[in-house]
Image (cartoon, rainbow, N blue to C red; front, side, top):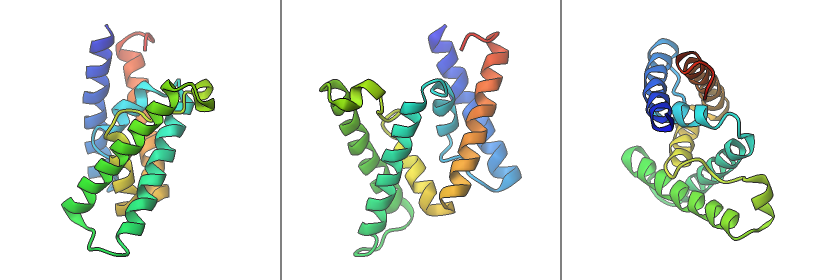
Length: 151
C-alpha cells in the first residue's frame, strides 16, 4: 500500500507540475517536488527543514555566482549537489540526537532541496513557494480521493 501511494504521489506530482507549468507558466519547484511534498504535508517540520535547506542552498549558489559564471546546467547541478550535501547534513543532525531531533527538521529526499533552490533562482521565491504549495495540496487531495483518505 505504501509503495502504491508513493508511486501515485510522484506520478500525480509530475502531472500537476506539468499542468501548472503549461497553464500558469510557473514551476512548482521541480517536476517531482509536489509529489514528495504532498507525502509530507502531515509533517510540517520536515517541510520547514526542506525549505530551510533550499534557502541555504539558494544563498550559497548566489554567493558562488558572484565569482563564476553560473547558469543553466552548471547552476542546476551545483544546486542539486549543495542541496544533497546540506540535506545529508540535516539527517546527521537528526540521527546524532541533537536538539533538532525533537523537531524532525530534516529535509525531504536528497535532490528536492536542490531542485527547489534552482527554481527559487529561476522564477523567484514567492512564485515558486506559492506554486509548490498549491500543487502539493492538490496532489495530497487527489491521493486522499484515490486511496479513500488513507494517506
